[in-house]
Length: 325
View 1 (tube, rainbow, N blue to C red):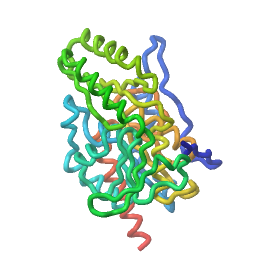
View 2 (view 1 turned 180 degrees about the vertical axis):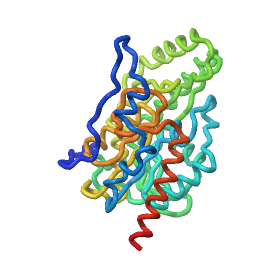
View 3 (view 1 turned 30 degrees about the vertical axis):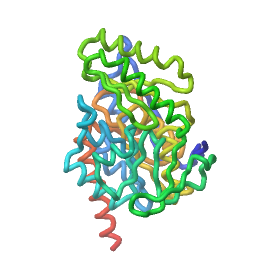
């Protein structure tokens, strides 16, 4: 489906250095890890030193980045302060939230109209014009929204919808006996939550059950996240390609003057980090309070750091505009 970026000759992205294992096979200390993935907040001036005169485009994950990870996924609310910070950032820069959740569910949490949304790990995107570079135009569907505005829906996994609904039905019927488990319909993917499953034997039983249920569906694959199993169709699409698609819909058809900034905490965000590395300029920022392997150049500890960083980012832009004025 395209959107493979060409690496830049003039890169600002730090060389990747994955977290190392110690002699016991454990990941290195967080302090040591920070030496390779320094705090984007503590090193804000260094991070932004190459940004003046460039077009920054901000991409944000939701769960674990804008909101804390919580037991009940339906209660993953963002704070009013975070909403205000995202609103200000979106006034200063083109901003998109790229989540594994349903697009409409993310909007219910965020409630901001000056932000673009991509749900289902980028498999559900709606924009005013769509992308001229999309190789398979059948995935772009022109429509009119409830307010009468023309939109283009991008759904590269649309053909899988009936099967996804079938899988959800089977999963719900079979996982009822696992207390604390939850099946979340995220439109083009399915999330099996087990954060509230207290018994490790039940967690193992749930994993085996899901894997067994999915064997008759070879067009889907299972990946694991933070106390979740995610079931997705085998389409050549991810958050990295969604980033490229959104950049094109925003009018950035080359990367000479654009600096994508992506903040995320999940394994699926690594695809976006890799794309920024391939572009050769931008800011891949992982949100994590533990040392882990990542393609990100910088880090933030958690949503509280994200909030402080976004506030500072908006102030930086306003100060820059005042200097120019």
